[in-house]
Image (cartoon, rainbow, N blue to C red):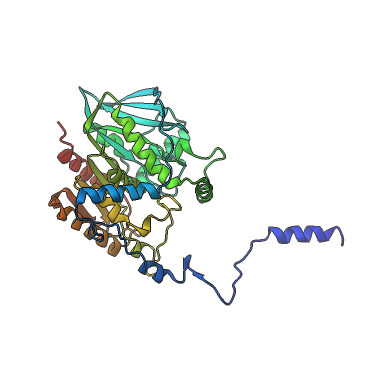
Length: 383
């Protein structure tokens, strides 16, 4: 019996732990029970028109400064990019390069660059990959990979059919004459865990970063800003004609980048826009499933998503969301679009904001990509 007892205890410890409930509780369906009171206190005092500032440029400076403040300390800028070309591949109408460079003093990253045939400099697009709860690939979601093993290539091809209708968005834009750049966000692709992909570790790592006084989501945005600064240094790039685009988390990255970087002249965001009062409620059965991918502490006390995106005004911006997108309930999308329209209209540039609802789900197929390309054609003055 004495020999069996330890085995019984060990078996009990290995058994799944089922939820234990108490009569009293303070959280329900992953929300605090006082969520309505929290929502009521989100008055967004720094949104355009909500405060006392009536000078638009002054508002932009102060609101942008508040966003950066909430993003906490950035990674230090690199002393030198020290860019190296790892390999090239000729494609139909353009050349693909895989490069490596210092994105900050903390880390060196790899990226793809597609350079059109002909004489530059070319209009450029910083193409920002999605989340998809799929961290094994990043930049490979946007540009057809090479110099990779068959597992990566197969995964990237399969992702195209799942989200992009079988068409690599970066290669499509390159065939239209755009220089295209795409790099991994922190935790994706070649910037992932040494132990391998584990979606559940994302939140733990983000929490560890916060313990250092840094924010993983903010690092993603800081990196997007820094990669655009790097893009400007390439001799093939027209420095006055740089845009950005992305789908899902890539769309979030696109409007954040457009709002915070003066280098970006045009932005396109597919399937990521909503208001917090709709996103974070029991009513629509939604919650923050992206982990810490867009979590910037304290920022919601000052600005909601559409208010931050409005810092891009008066730039030409394209927003597309799907009417059947389960991640972003339509009432929240329409409300967010309305908030942004008021800002562009207040500056008498309402035609520069194009916000469309498409009869689709959470996707970015060839027709959507063609719409994004036409928007760039119209606003980046493709020659």
